[in-house]
Image (tube, rainbow, N blue to C red; front, side, top):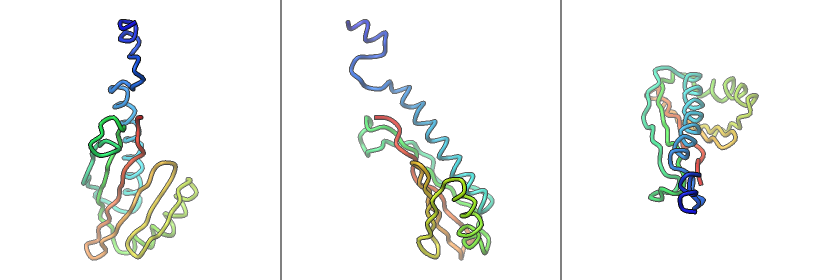
Length: 137
């Protein structure tokens, strides 16, 4: 029985760590793509600030993995207004829920993705990102 469990992939019901990493990276890539695409729509000179696969529950490696991903973009004057009108209308047509939370903060949600955009108008910068859905157990 022990040999059969080892050949088949384990009998403990725990997901293979390699398969878990592959699944987590697929979810992470979808999230990176969504953030980068939004960043390109609102500004230029995209710079990755954080790109890290972490455990879903801090210090619990068996909790699955998720991506924490943030970028910054140059955001010229008028970007916030364009984001909350034209860009928001386009994204809502693509299934995103758009919620302006204040004069410098806009949230975007679709499926298990949540992206926040925070503006620093005095610096003409926007920071975008968040964390992906959890992949794994």
